[in-house]
Length: 227
Image (tube, rainbow, N blue to C red; front, top):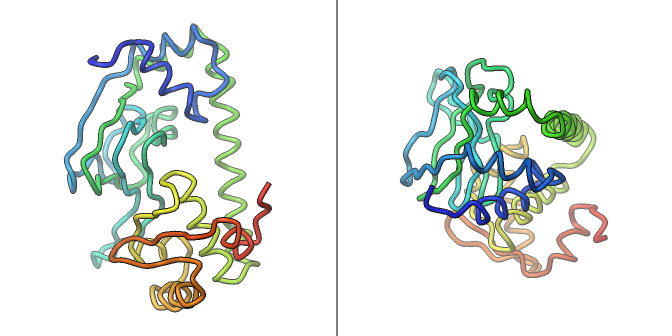
């Protein structure tokens, strides 16, 4: 690896997926990570592909989604620097459940499944951390289902944008089609709401991105506690 071990451990420890691991456990994980670069628009894997391991993004942007038989795309998530994905396939060894495509030049750490499972056999703390992560992901899925059922579209959209802002900062790079897929509404609904927020000065819009000018006000729109 071109990064020194301490650099890799520092990057891993800053990610919620690896937070809480001991220094020794992180060093062992770093030792089996490999670097992988993916040019913009290149496919990392497709739904149904064999699983080979987990990915942690150093920098760049990955779209997680699916495409139906008519060629229509649904964006399930947009992932940036510090995000981890592929943990389900890492553990169960079954085929990929979605497509992963680089939206821009992306650098990642790759954690091979075979090597990681061997590490799990030796490090019970890592296994415990994985259980906590999967429980958190399940809670997130349940929360999104509740939002879709009970919350108005404007609040759901604001919350999705805030989640992206947590990763990318106040300048969120996402198309209206992607925001619609993430929120479970139509593109027209997204456009109408974004234009409304633009008129009030809360955000500004450009092609494929938006900028949040006042996070506190935007949290109020999302009905999210600023604390």
